[in-house]
Image (cartoon, rainbow, N blue to C red; front, side, top):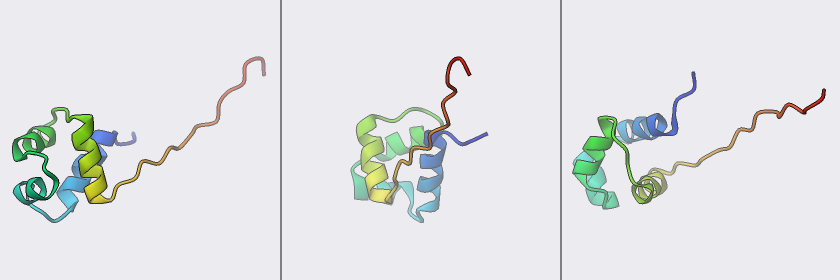
Length: 71
């Protein structure tokens, strides 16, 4: 099963080589928010955008072929 976007962001945070404190200082996303997110809670869209930008993440859309009706 493919990882969720949240799981992929958690992996990127874990792999960035920075403590949550330092990542918080660099991005402005509070350390408390980061800790809650890493524990499985949600994160605001604004915080996701800030973290994604800072970590150099891109969202890639992989479309599945659509089944046509009547075929």
